Image (cartoon, rainbow, N blue to C red):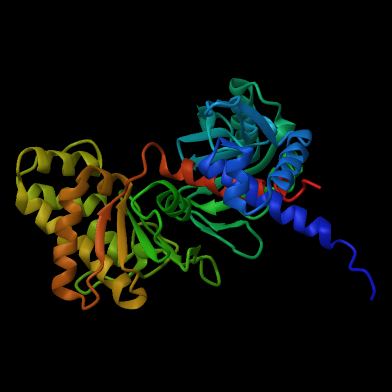
Length: 387
């Protein structure tokens, strides 16, 4: 019978990957504990750990006191075996974070892009500063994921259009890859917030959910079967353009802030709603929501919830995700009180009655999602190259 070259190597790769994932999620572990969790013998798990330690992927992480015998050595994934970068690009700031392969953020910096019109140079500068802060060489970064507003073409990876970031256009991705390497990915910011929600927030363990980003601009991230749904052109989730009864349709989709749902829940609309309820103008939409909650202005919160429910109900009757997470400035400011009222308002008009929750992600959700995406790519590369 002919031999099947590569089969033992493939099995070792599979076992190595399983062990590394266990060390990330449950570690540090002893050799015996790793053997029990993987189903491998003590001898095989010992050989595996030795191989991964030689490759620099696993390192000793202390000892666990035993019974009468000597303490058992603990092993964990070597944090410095690889690094990634995640970025959030806004019109007035670019924030870059560097994380080690375990997901620990080791540096975060923000730069002002106003003095440099070239997005490639701005991103490069932000990454260099983050690397300098982390004392990590640029060449040790395995992947870069950049979150930005606008529609990203799922085929080319380029930004097709972004009203807020006109300098981000076709060709930017090629320029970034020329400077930083092939593993540079541009992703819609709300899609990255959805990844962060799935990993750290209110949607942990949920495969089908949507995240409604409500603020000055509106966006939607959709997760179906545990995977982001981007649409054929990358335009899935542009909920600001959702037609709404009583609101005018845009006469030109190239004009920003003219979508019907945007007109219903955008900054100008909420400013008008606040005046109707006697709320003094505050800095930003989040300030209006916080003031309404602090002063007990339930009428404003109820009306806001009813407007947000229009978007949530539209998503629910089409996708039936079961869970909708409120994020963005309005979602964070409104908290559980707003989420509960949106859920009640949706239940009155929607037969599927999804749960509505406030975001559970701490810190910058776009940046955290970018790091999650970059770690996924980097681990696929690093953890598959062990034998």
